[in-house]
Image (cartoon, rainbow, N blue to C red; front, side, top):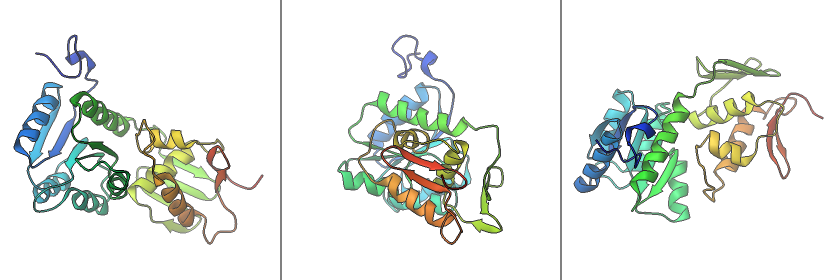
Length: 243
């Protein structure tokens, strides 16, 4: 069988079989997408409205979700926000005919991991979905990270500084984990886009600045010294003490 992921033998380009949730109300668009993903070797569930999509997202284990923005019963951004409010880290690709910068910003701020504008090339969508899946399964072996009196535990999904528990949103947790995995080293904006947001392009938004600001307020505000530092013209660094 021909698989869209590869023009030679198809199946060879599919690095893994994933369970994918597609939330799309347009019957023709959904049929096209489901067929392509299944031919690429993935298991796919489909919901035709936002409420059903939310129920599936919260009740089943998926590797990736593809969510249309304009949906009946519950719009896509509301669906994504509801998933994030439940603490779910399900990677989500937003599909939308709305492609302006402000539209993309709204999709990312709602909790989307990537944003693809319609009409799209299936090969690009497949590459983005599989990139999101790779990030999800690429779990580091270390489970606890410490920088000074800051500790992050991946297994319990908790963070604390000293005796103070730090409440982090899923994206903030992922951002802090990446910074702590690279403690003492400069982490560039490009590195953050690729490893925390899984973008291999610049979305031309201030999404990193917003999340860094929120994270800094949570881990540094009220403590005697800062751990998260901006390295002017280079990026960010988390380290103990001042130099």
